[in-house]
Image 1 (cartoon, rainbow, N blue to C red):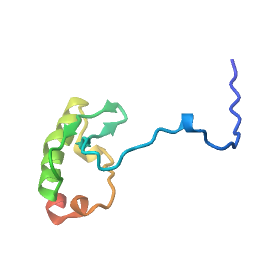
Image 2 (cartoon, rainbow, N blue to C red):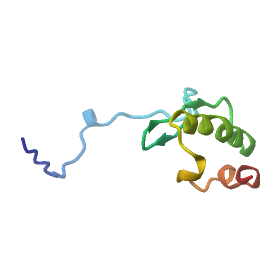
Image 3 (cartoon, rainbow, N blue to C red):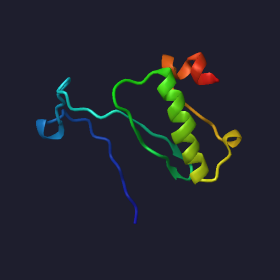
Image 4 (cartoon, rainbow, N blue to C red):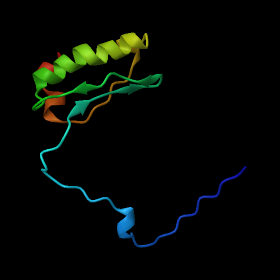
Length: 93
């Protein structure tokens, strides 16, 4: 069976767009990760995220994920963006 995907440029129709409501008061903030072997633990974050909480999440949830998949922390490539809490001195310790 072969599949042919064809790019066609057409204007979007309203039925293809789902509008979002900003600041509706309904939101969920989570941290998660994934590995080559599968998804990692998901951590729900209540309130804001600062460097201290981020460090705690890495120490607990990231490490638990590595242990679950029997991965050594020295053998992984850890990627994140350059958000201030990710690059804080506390986080790098």
